[in-house]
Length: 123
Image (cartoon, rainbow, N blue to C red; front, side):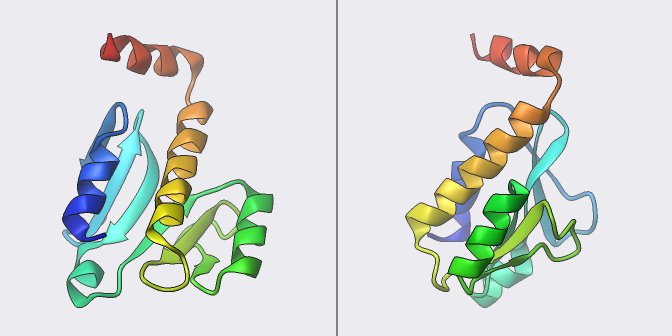
């Protein structure tokens, strides 16, 4: 998967917005105003991309134990975020699954009103 494919995949999710809140390099995807994925454009260009993804604490520990490419979140809460180094020992399909899990976790943490607003926009 390349940067364009990753970008397009993220935008297929409902109500996703893209931002550069920190600098011109760090692309952040949000749902309902909450981050679910961060990535460095420069690292994609260098061929060493990684994604910061939110996860449940117990699942994060399991992933870190199983995959060398999964590390505690860089510049994030080490309990709730992982940095997943792309092109390492995590297959594309599994990377997208982790991205989906991050999105769903953040979406489920939104207020019921915000969730309903997002769902209503799809109709």
